[in-house]
Image (cartoon, rainbow, N blue to C red; front, side, top):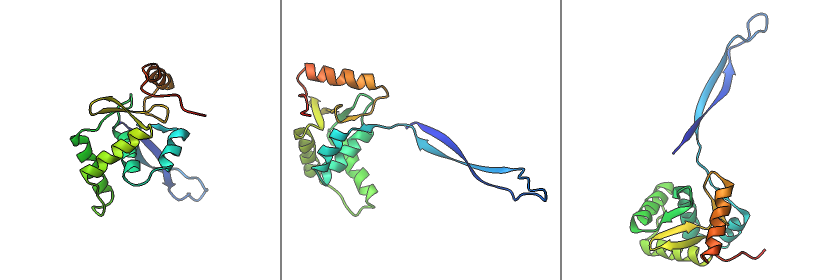
Length: 154
């Protein structure tokens, strides 16, 4: 994961007798540089869901490649189950069956699109992780031409 360092002023020494502050104090923190864009159409689709499909979709967005590709094999499912268990402090968990049903739900509403067995693409109409918007447009065009997705009603 790529990080960027952010420096910020955290304070200063007390002013001297002339009111001059001679030394500023700085701290820093690291921020994730990677990001994705969830578009309004994707938010509307997510709002219709709850529970496992929503959490799974957000996890898939996090782990997807820059071209939105994700695997849904048992390894990815187990990674998601571990991730969710850690995120909830072990209080909540999902079964493999429930996660597979969530994958089916995401596929049925068009948030993920099957590419090959066990490989999906997060629908670039709704989410894009890549750095260039032109790549998103090309991906949508390519998927429409191949019939992998259908035009969304507006």
